[in-house]
Image (cartoon, rainbow, N blue to C red; front, side, top):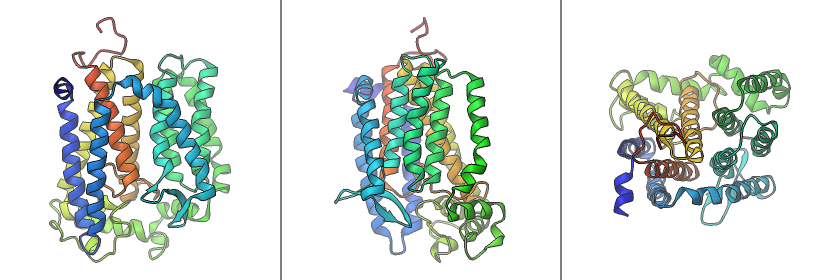
Length: 368
């Protein structure tokens, strides 16, 4: 046990501790007026997630390989149950009610798919048409079930993360370019079948002022909050946009605006720096991983974290259309936080089992 603790990656642990402190502080600022039960619940989520994180850290990576396909099958089954018995919240049917708590199967699927793809390509050539076709089907099935919930943001994250893992596994670039071309060609068809509110989000992204009290309200209020924060912010618990409830969904999708208003450019930069350091460290661990399976897991985790952060911050600042994507380790939510911590536990396990290898070594290097 002590040997495992000594082998843990200190940089990754430090980043996680800083993100936990910053995330809980920002969430407190967002909900302190009448919503402290959410903050208390988030602390429970953190404690539960950290217990899961440590459990994964002490579990051999081969166990993750054995669980890869059962986890994928279970997540796929849960997604299939959502349209039948799922609970409707905020106009979308995305959750399963398990009595004591609610589960969002799409959150589970992102990580289950990452694990399954890593296991699939651990000993297979991605340049094989058969292997690549199976992987594409593995991505397409859950993506189809998620898009009908509807949940465009999660669908995009899942598809993009799957595509990156395919390329990382060795998919020829010409195939990747061909797939990208097909997706671009399908955009008119996708537009025709998008829900009215999804089309409105895209149009609002192009011109938020076209409906300042309706579809454009979220982005406008968010940009006001971020801009008013200035360099050093208005101070902890002194943000007017959040305190006066002008900022919608301030504890989930738009929590970055709370951070930027109260902590200013400095606090926002600290958060971005933590993300950059964490993602860079995960990729460094992928570089020195002792197995191809471990390397692909790290690449998948780094990709999903990057997409989460980029899409959330992009939509809050008006750079991207508004979609329901949480800010990693900061937004309120149990399913997202728990799955992120379990995924980070897998990365830490890869680091533990690869301890002693230099960071520039490739998996399977003669120097292993």
